[in-house]
Length: 122
Image (tube, rainbow, N blue to C red; front, side, top):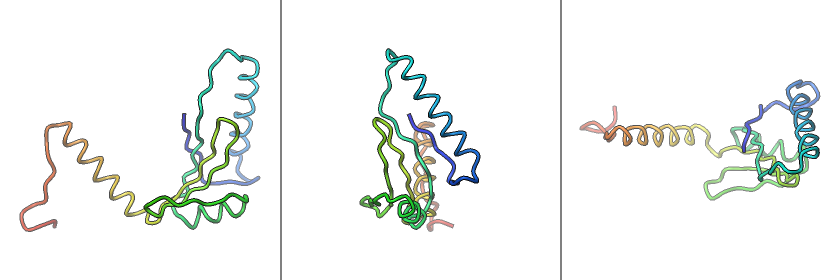
C-alpha cells in the first residue's frame, strides 16, 4: 500500500495534521481489530529533485541514500510502515523516459510499434 503525500510540510499545512489524525485513527482501529492483517507499506513523499530531498532529510536528521542513477531518497521506518521521501537527479529526464516507456507499452498492447521517422526525429 502506498500513498503519495503532498510535498508541503509544517504546522501551517492542515493536510499534514489531517493525515496524522487519520494515521492515529488507523492505528487505533488496528489495535481494536487485531485479527485484521496489516502488510508492510510505504508512505511516499515526492519531492521531485535531489536538493529538495537533501534539505528535507537534513531538517529531520535522516540519512540520504542514492541509487545507481544518482536519485536521492530518505527513509524513516515506523514498524511495518516506511515513510519514503524521494527525488531525481534530473527530473525532466526521468519524466521523458517514463513518458516514452508508457507510450511504447501502450503501442505494444495495441499491436503497434513506435519508430523514428525517416531522417530522424523532427
